[in-house]
Length: 255
Image 1 (tube, helix red, strand yellow):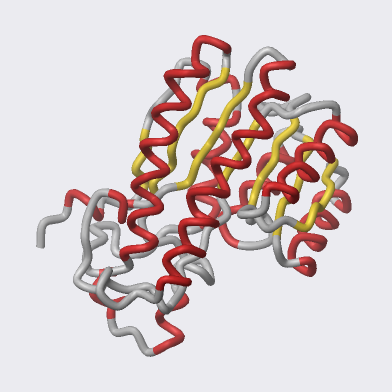
Image 2: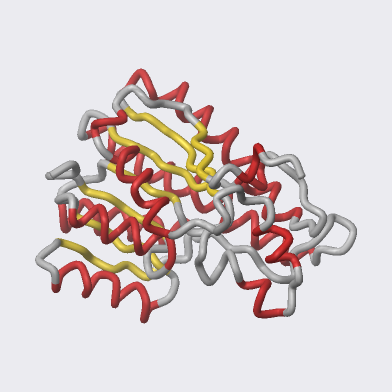
């Protein structure tokens, strides 16, 4: 098993990419801390893992709150003995987001609090535990929107995901010598409720976005989980500071 003996914290693990990764990590032998703000989905993810014979614990978590992060890391240590992998997957993409001239300030602040401050706080509290175990892996989820603009702007989301790449590169340099590697997954559009939420509000942009994908479809959560598994495992022991774009070729498609 590729993650045997490892303890993995996965944020936003109640649904979408996070849940897919949590289940995949468990299948490969990891003990998983489900850090999720939604009690129903978080608890059901942990139940699904334990029902399959795996080890998991659910901790209700608002990643923007430092007190919640203290409880998440404490649960990992008390229940499983430490932290080896931190997968900062949780994010928000509010429908109120837009260009800088019209995005509400509370939407801007909340988006950065979850998408940027959340991973920072996770690293703040998980890194000391990783150091006690001799190293670990930090996986931060960005987006191709960190690299390209869009005719339908989502500037709060875009700014948060771009900043997360810079933060990850700093972590890779500072903590790489101490055995902690930090890497970024930058997906294109993945078929999750969050990524496709604009469709439910009559957004005509989904077909426009789909036309950018040479493979002819959006991605699936399991396809991101496969990459996350590589980064969580010792197979990626020389992968540090990388930004891995996984988007079906959308970024290279000049239309």
